Amino acid sequence: MTSHTQTPPAAAVPGLSGKRVTFFVLLGLAVIGAGISYTLWTYSRLDVARKASAIAWRDLTEQLALRYRSAEKIVAQGVDSRQTKMEFGERFQLAVDRFRTIALLTDQYQAGLSVEELLGSEDFIAINMAVNGSRHLPQSDELKQAVEGFNQMRARERDLLDSFGGKMLDIVLKFVAPTPFELAH
Image (cartoon, rainbow, N blue to C red; front, side, top):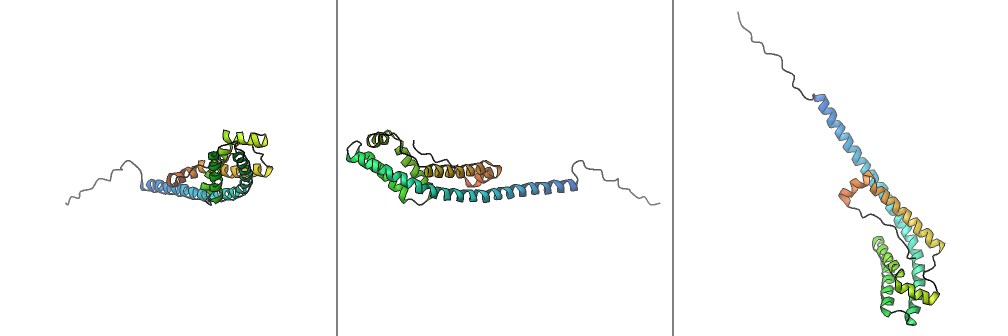
Protein backbone atom coordinates (compact mmCIF):
# COMPACT_ATOMS: atom_id res chain seq x y z
CA MET A 1 0.00 0.00 0.00
CA THR A 2 0.97 3.41 -0.62
CA SER A 3 0.97 5.76 2.13
CA HIS A 4 -0.44 9.10 1.62
CA THR A 5 0.49 11.80 3.89
CA GLN A 6 -2.26 14.00 4.71
CA THR A 7 -1.59 17.60 5.36
CA PRO A 8 -3.29 18.97 8.35
CA PRO A 9 -5.88 21.66 7.67
CA ALA A 10 -4.50 25.22 7.85
CA ALA A 11 -4.85 26.69 11.24
CA ALA A 12 -6.86 29.87 11.43
CA VAL A 13 -4.61 32.83 12.03
CA PRO A 14 -6.07 35.09 14.64
CA GLY A 15 -6.56 38.70 13.46
CA LEU A 16 -8.51 40.52 10.81
CA SER A 17 -9.94 38.93 7.75
CA GLY A 18 -9.30 40.40 4.31
CA LYS A 19 -12.86 41.70 4.16
CA ARG A 20 -12.45 43.61 7.40
CA VAL A 21 -9.12 45.13 6.33
CA THR A 22 -10.69 46.23 3.06
CA PHE A 23 -13.65 47.72 4.94
CA PHE A 24 -11.39 49.74 7.27
CA VAL A 25 -9.21 50.96 4.40
CA LEU A 26 -12.27 52.09 2.44
CA LEU A 27 -13.77 53.68 5.55
CA GLY A 28 -10.51 55.57 6.20
CA LEU A 29 -10.40 56.79 2.60
CA ALA A 30 -14.03 57.93 2.82
CA VAL A 31 -13.35 59.86 6.05
CA ILE A 32 -10.22 61.52 4.58
CA GLY A 33 -12.12 62.36 1.39
CA ALA A 34 -14.99 63.87 3.37
CA GLY A 35 -12.55 65.93 5.46
CA ILE A 36 -10.79 67.25 2.36
CA SER A 37 -14.11 68.04 0.69
CA TYR A 38 -15.32 69.92 3.77
CA THR A 39 -12.05 71.84 3.99
CA LEU A 40 -12.27 72.87 0.33
CA TRP A 41 -15.92 73.85 0.81
CA THR A 42 -14.86 75.98 3.78
CA TYR A 43 -12.14 77.59 1.66
CA SER A 44 -14.74 78.50 -0.95
CA ARG A 45 -17.01 80.02 1.69
CA LEU A 46 -14.06 81.86 3.23
CA ASP A 47 -13.15 83.31 -0.16
CA VAL A 48 -16.71 84.61 -0.56
CA ALA A 49 -16.62 86.08 2.96
CA ARG A 50 -13.28 87.78 2.28
CA LYS A 51 -14.65 89.34 -0.90
CA ALA A 52 -17.68 90.59 1.03
CA SER A 53 -15.30 92.10 3.62
CA ALA A 54 -13.39 93.86 0.84
CA ILE A 55 -16.61 95.38 -0.51
CA ALA A 56 -17.64 96.46 3.00
CA TRP A 57 -14.18 97.97 3.50
CA ARG A 58 -14.52 100.05 0.33
CA ASP A 59 -17.83 101.41 1.65
CA LEU A 60 -16.16 102.17 4.97
CA THR A 61 -13.18 103.94 3.37
CA GLU A 62 -15.54 106.45 1.75
CA GLN A 63 -16.92 107.35 5.17
CA LEU A 64 -13.47 107.34 6.77
CA ALA A 65 -12.19 109.72 4.08
CA LEU A 66 -14.88 112.22 5.11
CA ARG A 67 -14.00 111.76 8.79
CA TYR A 68 -10.29 112.22 8.14
CA ARG A 69 -10.88 115.30 5.99
CA SER A 70 -12.69 117.04 8.86
CA ALA A 71 -9.98 115.89 11.30
CA GLU A 72 -7.32 117.34 8.99
CA LYS A 73 -9.03 120.73 9.18
CA ILE A 74 -9.04 120.57 12.96
CA VAL A 75 -5.35 119.60 13.10
CA ALA A 76 -4.47 122.34 10.59
CA GLN A 77 -6.30 124.92 12.73
CA GLY A 78 -4.50 123.66 15.81
CA VAL A 79 -1.10 123.89 14.13
CA ASP A 80 -1.85 127.33 12.65
CA SER A 81 -2.95 128.70 16.00
CA ARG A 82 0.05 127.01 17.68
CA GLN A 83 -2.22 125.01 19.97
CA THR A 84 -0.35 121.88 18.98
CA LYS A 85 3.13 120.98 17.85
CA MET A 86 4.03 120.89 14.19
CA GLU A 87 5.32 117.33 14.77
CA PHE A 88 1.85 116.05 15.55
CA GLY A 89 0.42 117.82 12.51
CA GLU A 90 3.04 116.22 10.26
CA ARG A 91 2.56 112.74 11.77
CA PHE A 92 -1.18 113.07 11.36
CA GLN A 93 -0.90 114.28 7.76
CA LEU A 94 1.49 111.43 6.87
CA ALA A 95 -0.88 108.86 8.39
CA VAL A 96 -3.87 110.28 6.47
CA ASP A 97 -1.87 110.45 3.22
CA ARG A 98 -0.78 106.85 3.69
CA PHE A 99 -4.41 105.82 4.22
CA ARG A 100 -5.47 107.60 1.03
CA THR A 101 -2.69 106.30 -1.21
CA ILE A 102 -2.65 102.61 -0.28
CA ALA A 103 -4.76 100.30 -2.42
CA LEU A 104 -4.27 96.94 -0.68
CA LEU A 105 -7.01 96.26 1.83
CA THR A 106 -4.77 94.87 4.57
CA ASP A 107 -2.31 97.78 4.34
CA GLN A 108 -5.04 100.40 4.10
CA TYR A 109 -6.77 98.79 7.07
CA GLN A 110 -3.56 99.14 9.12
CA ALA A 111 -3.19 102.75 7.94
CA GLY A 112 -6.77 103.45 9.06
CA LEU A 113 -6.00 101.99 12.48
CA SER A 114 -2.95 104.27 12.69
CA VAL A 115 -5.07 107.34 11.91
CA GLU A 116 -7.68 106.27 14.48
CA GLU A 117 -4.92 105.84 17.05
CA LEU A 118 -3.84 109.43 16.41
CA LEU A 119 -7.46 110.60 16.64
CA GLY A 120 -7.68 108.98 20.07
CA SER A 121 -4.41 110.51 21.27
CA GLU A 122 -4.26 113.23 23.89
CA ASP A 123 -2.72 115.58 21.31
CA PHE A 124 -5.75 115.37 19.04
CA ILE A 125 -8.22 115.54 21.92
CA ALA A 126 -6.55 118.74 23.14
CA ILE A 127 -6.72 120.30 19.64
CA ASN A 128 -10.34 119.28 19.19
CA MET A 129 -11.25 120.70 22.59
CA ALA A 130 -9.59 124.00 21.70
CA VAL A 131 -11.12 124.22 18.21
CA ASN A 132 -14.55 122.62 18.66
CA GLY A 133 -15.03 122.41 22.41
CA SER A 134 -15.48 118.64 22.15
CA ARG A 135 -13.27 115.69 22.98
CA HIS A 136 -14.48 113.59 20.05
CA LEU A 137 -15.15 113.91 16.37
CA PRO A 138 -18.82 113.55 15.50
CA GLN A 139 -19.73 110.21 13.92
CA SER A 140 -22.36 110.17 11.20
CA ASP A 141 -24.96 107.42 11.01
CA GLU A 142 -23.48 106.37 7.66
CA LEU A 143 -20.06 105.97 9.27
CA LYS A 144 -21.46 103.93 12.15
CA GLN A 145 -23.38 101.69 9.73
CA ALA A 146 -20.31 101.21 7.52
CA VAL A 147 -18.17 100.24 10.52
CA GLU A 148 -20.85 97.86 11.76
CA GLY A 149 -21.25 96.28 8.30
CA PHE A 150 -17.51 95.80 7.91
CA ASN A 151 -17.15 94.31 11.38
CA GLN A 152 -19.99 91.87 10.67
CA MET A 153 -18.15 90.66 7.58
CA ARG A 154 -14.95 90.28 9.60
CA ALA A 155 -16.86 88.29 12.24
CA ARG A 156 -18.10 85.97 9.47
CA GLU A 157 -14.51 85.40 8.37
CA ARG A 158 -13.46 84.69 11.97
CA ASP A 159 -16.30 82.17 12.37
CA LEU A 160 -15.21 80.34 9.23
CA LEU A 161 -11.58 80.30 10.38
CA ASP A 162 -12.66 78.90 13.75
CA SER A 163 -14.57 76.02 12.12
CA PHE A 164 -13.02 72.57 11.58
CA GLY A 165 -12.42 73.34 7.90
CA GLY A 166 -10.86 76.68 8.81
CA LYS A 167 -8.51 75.04 11.28
CA MET A 168 -7.50 72.52 8.60
CA LEU A 169 -6.85 75.39 6.17
CA ASP A 170 -4.84 77.24 8.79
CA ILE A 171 -2.42 74.32 9.00
CA VAL A 172 -1.43 74.90 5.39
CA LEU A 173 -2.24 78.55 4.65
CA LYS A 174 -1.70 80.36 7.99
CA PHE A 175 -4.45 82.96 7.85
CA VAL A 176 -4.22 86.08 9.98
CA ALA A 177 -7.28 86.31 12.19
CA PRO A 178 -9.40 89.27 11.07
CA THR A 179 -9.94 91.93 13.69
CA PRO A 180 -12.75 94.46 13.90
CA PHE A 181 -12.20 98.10 12.99
CA GLU A 182 -12.77 100.49 15.86
CA LEU A 183 -13.19 104.23 15.68
CA ALA A 184 -11.45 106.46 18.19
CA HIS A 185 -14.02 107.97 20.51
